[in-house]
Amino acid sequence: MGTRSTTQTERTGPLSGVRVVELAGIGPGPFAAMLLADLGADVVRVDRPGGAALGIDPAHDLTNRNKRSVVLDLKADGGTGTVLDLVARADILIEGYRPGVAERLGLGPDACLARNPRLVYGRMTGWGQDGPLAKAAGHDIAYLAVTGTLGMIGPDPDGPPTVPANLVGDYAGGSLYLVIGVLAALQHARTHGEGQIVDAAIVDGAAHLATMIHGMLAAGSWQDRRGVNLLDGGCPFYGVYETSDGGFMAVGALEQQFYDEFVRLLGIEEAAPARRDLARWDELRAAVAARFRTRTRAEWTGVFEGTDACVAPVLSMREAPAHPHLAARGTFVEHGGLVQPAPAPRFSATPGAVRTGPARPGADADEVARDWAVPALHTPDAPHTPDTPPSPDAPPSPDAQESKNA
Image 1: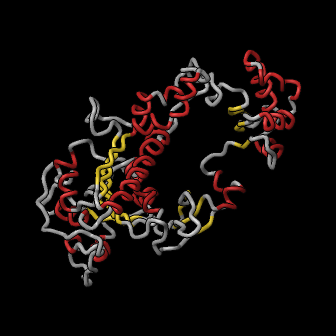
Image 2 (image 1 turned 180 degrees about the vertical axis):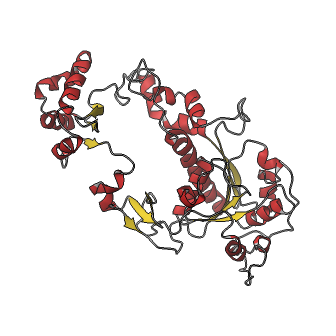
Image 3 (image 1 turned 90 degrees about the vertical axis):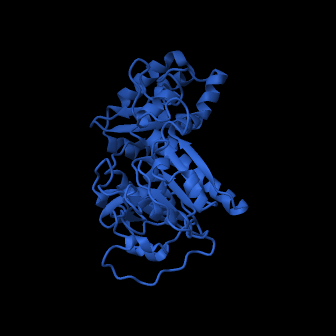
């Protein structure tokens, strides 16, 4: 398989000691919480009875790895109050509801910061907390569409944009910006004792990702249409080509020295001068495509392996873990029989790890009740152990408030 197994359970990583409450949702919120958990944070996911809307088997939901779960009905008596007890002991809260929903549940920023003034309150939405579309429904593809980011992706200027799964919007434009935001706010809270709200909107993040392209557009070095530019498939030496067996090779030979190596190994030196002549790019693309179709993906992989031609085989998700480079680095790991990407990035002194598999809804209630000193989480008939006192840095825990209906 080319993966390494891991059975580590001890909480390690640079965020060890950081406590996070995740109000269960789907998409970018859970992925952001997984990133924090991978880096050592103690993430408690508050699941609702009935499970997530997408219905994935909890045993296979890798975005819930390294977390613990409790189940609370936020519309029942005591549900909101118990969450606020967790909030009183937390450093960060993450929620992904539409604007106003958390407030109606009694878990909005005002209520949470009243219990814990040092709390970082992370809000993950598509449209953001304000603006004409703030309360509208939406998904990744719509958020990408209005930012101009979706419109630039795809090799065919006359065809539709290419849908990049939900990686660019939900995870790059959403989760990663939320994580950056809450960690920056956590630094401020620890320095100044002041919590705050982090409004992470996918439209903001997806637009921000295109900052370099906007600069190129302003400079006149990028056309405002897809499939005709240097980095969007318009360039014949930056793209994907089919091989004789139906596989594909990815080419990124942008710089002259890499391009020279590429055309030499591909065997099209006679077409090499077309690199500098945009009028001949179609001719060059045809030559490259014709040559790639003469051999299989494995054969071309052997030709380019170990060179500086900047060419690589396009692998499937199931093939990727066995790639020699990824296997040597341990880019994928196996835990509990599930092959999955390893935590990233890597730290020399405080490495992250896959410590536990996906959290099962409610399975950790008694453990969290003990560790976080929230006795209301104890499940009926469970053996109670003496509660661990809250961290000295945690704010006092006043009486729980009554829950409010959404």
